[in-house]
Length: 444
Image 1 (cartoon, helix red, strand yellow):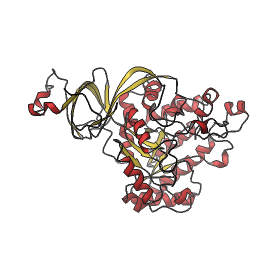
Image 2 (cartoon, helix red, strand yellow):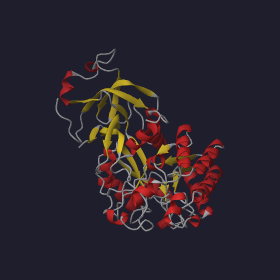
Image 3 (cartoon, rainbow, N blue to C red):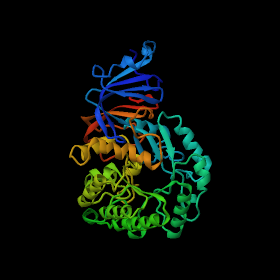
Image 4 (cartoon, helix red, strand yellow):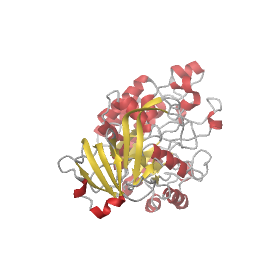
């Protein structure tokens, strides 16, 4: 059989892998047959009852068949990230759509949703069209949110209906908290009318003196005030209340506070259509990482205490937190080399997300692999009503194949940037193949 060619449209037989489908709960050794851009058959492994591949592939099609030996590997739906920054247009020295998509593929992601804080901002159809057209050239599915407010000013709604028609996945002013309650209420009412999603960066700046570092023991050791968890908790409380009032679907982005998790838990119990995400770094690290890594551990909202970290994990376990999303935020080495209080917040996430999650959630026993795939594939797809996130016959041929037990050292990135506290760390869980639309997009 011919060698697998990157981007080549062929039939693929994935043989003998541990197939994990979070939609059905399937977690068994199976073979999978892909034809064009669909999963056409999931069956017992070859040699077992019903597992003879020749039953499903006519002899004349054998020359087009590629085999991936997946014995000892997990086969799961391609990962879906609802929160990435590809910095394109306008800030492409940090990242661009093509380098970001390449990093996503390396990390096992087949679908990503870009944020709107580019230059120019994605508050108009022309900029949105550019992002979507460039994304269409990458080999994975690159979607984009549009801005909630024109110019990120928090005063005037964008043309949400027109932007949806132009292909916007949802709406966010991510990075800029929306402080005017009446404006937020208006935005939620419009989102509810249109059946779309609002994603909110929840930090009340009136509580914050130096962002990116938790107000606590570490900030005191550094001689600064930092950012207290109350900044997050205040806006989460407000927006849970408004979501319940308006019926809007609201995503609480990159949660960091244990108290805010409890607020979301109560809001869900009352019937609010509230969703919540957490980053891999917020479940793996605490504020102490700033002392070791400096600006490479600086992000908004900041890493908080061990107590907060454990409450985030409990939120994942009981379903209060629906998704793991990277908040992939590239910055140049020069920017991150500035003094701690001046360096920009944010770290890379796409290439290490699965391994960090396996290392800190699956291996300690907090989540099963199937539950992890629910958080990284199925639920993100559900939020944006996407046809992905499941491994079933007839579903899109978007898959990640990984070794959950393989240890590897984080030594480089295909992203343009390298701002990660995990650089040099040894993690467990290695992506071996990423397949999108029936084509192998990683490895190249």
